[in-house]
Image 1 (tube, one colour):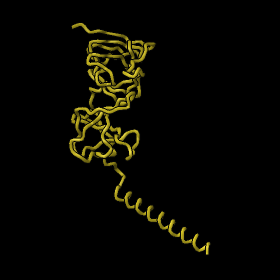
Image 2: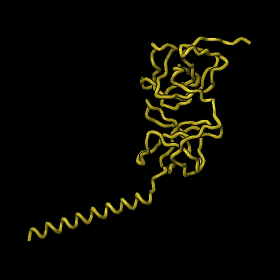
Image 3: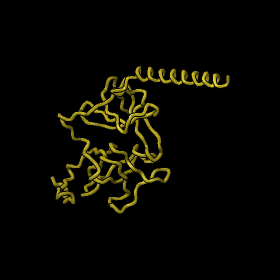
Image 4: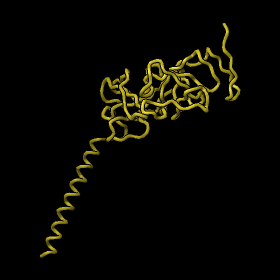
Length: 214
């Protein structure tokens, strides 16, 4: 069997077409290219805006295409406006092989899914919209909150580990999360205390003004 053998610009690494991963994940915020050329234009969405993929975006790779700098990836459901057969190019240096799992890999978690069958959502940055995926997380699943936690936001960006040990990324409803270190009963009690103190200060302030008038 013949293998496509290509020299690489990255540390002299040799790339075999047979070793191209079927799935990759972005390591950072990265654009999609129209052609496999760093001087190529970026892919644009249905609003004619450059498409940038968020860190952790998973992409399906065309394993029949071999290049030293780019993966050819399918873009359906990756951004708003992409068709079922659309594809683009992403820099190899900005991706990680998503098919590799490690038995010692452990996610450093800081939150828990508190409801059952919680759907994971995909975020479209250019359209600022969310769409539900086919993935659902079970109750008590340990996850890691990314980009900070804000209870006023509808969605929260998380990473989670599937049964095979692979770490994936997505969004869940903030109301479905229980974040470690946050005791909501204490927060409620503190809020009530602040309101009471504020009312007392207002009352004493009004009494003080009445005495001065006398």
